[in-house]
Length: 102
Image 1 (cartoon, rainbow, N blue to C red):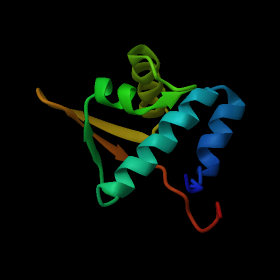
Image 2: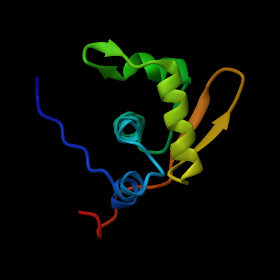
Image 3: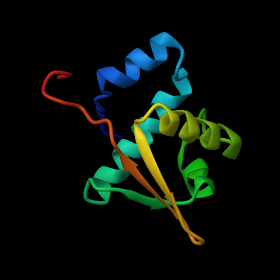
Image 4: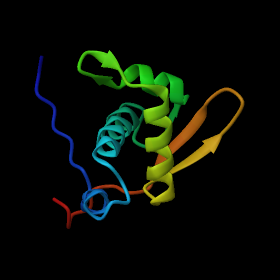
């Protein structure tokens, strides 16, 4: 298995430090970052249930409630935008790594 590196923006780390986000939100954000980059970097079209199955913690899929709460915190903090439809949801990353972060 190859190594993968993901850069997390300073704004998200600061929100964890101030209590607006929790450490699990970094895991969810890094998943969104990886998946949106696979899809061209613009957005991700997946349901919360599909995301929960994809996010593996200790060899098991993440719970749907953890993903739902994490997405809500990320949205409320202004880091993502969610557009809902009957089939799936469109998730857009609003906070990205800038030259200042790297």
